[in-house]
Length: 284
Ligand code: FPP
Image (cartoon, rainbow, N blue to C red; front, side, top):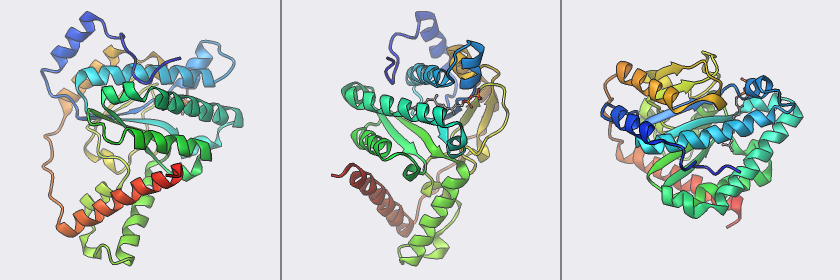
């Protein structure tokens, strides 16, 4: 069974190439639309499509190791869209079982994840998930909360439009509860109320060139990279190619604007509330 971070998957020559690529600008946040798992299962004549998702997870664990070696501090993956609930029951159940299995495994291996310093953040409308999956996810987020080498955002029961509408409700609640004046709401406040920050590079595999409702607000300045390979067949060479593409097309970094005191106070309160919600799901 594959762990979350695959060890010993980088050869000496690959490490050398990583070092060469690192002499240029490396994206500080990469997002992946891991597409093509079912086509992979079909291509390799597996009767069950969920085999493709298992292979997809294995590829994720390799990719995380490559990103750690590249020194990338934030990675986001689109693992399950709200739209995916409409797939056949067998497949949805298979993906939920995969999540149960992998999140439980992560808790069993928590010392190793903490050694790697990976903070896991699951982004999405968690209330749509089975209760035991919600509990596992909450435990994982709480257990990795203080890690700071890499943040892994897993978009699960997620769509970009749903994320934006949840952020809007949050801000409206803030105004109605007199925690935030209406004129304190600006683009930066909306960005900071969303689940996930802005990626510098977005990679989609399998030849599709759509965003499929992923991080719609956040990609306004993101470099996009589309690759024809199916996600389970993605290699370190595809990743390095995407980073070289980024180095050729990246816009200059944007300066970060400071929040006002009232904005910062609201955001801190929101953050504390989100952690409390997770603690109450776990029951502590
Ligand atoms: C898209 O390919 C992929 C998904 C809907 C699921 C991706 C999930 C994983 C890689 C596992 C992640 C698991 C955890 C616990 C983080 P597709 O099914 O749409 O394939 P197709 O485009 O060939 O139809």
